[in-house]
Image 1 (spheres, rainbow, N blue to C red):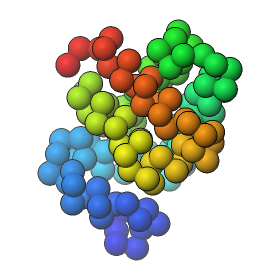
Image 2: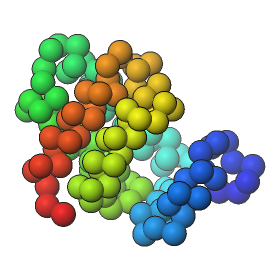
Image 3: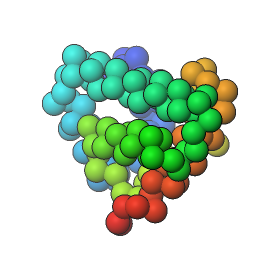
Length: 130
């Protein structure tokens, strides 16, 4: 992507993680998938998010079977961009509640969803190996 990109977070991401393997993987993978591919990938993320909100609203625990299956899908979804590790996933979970931009995106879907996602993600990392 160039400096005229529509993504306002690209420069920040480049500054924070530009020298990491994950960032380089993401650049390559996004370029390969193209605009249509990226659109489909983001639609899948929207579906996962909506289903997580349904789980939460139904009173299901973030560590419960249904939520954990959705979190597993979310973890695998990240592979569209980079190969996550449990440590990276825990960091992302923290960002979902500490970075207001992430939090706001989840809270627009359902109040409390950012914390619910974090709880589910943290629980999921207990089941995967570093």
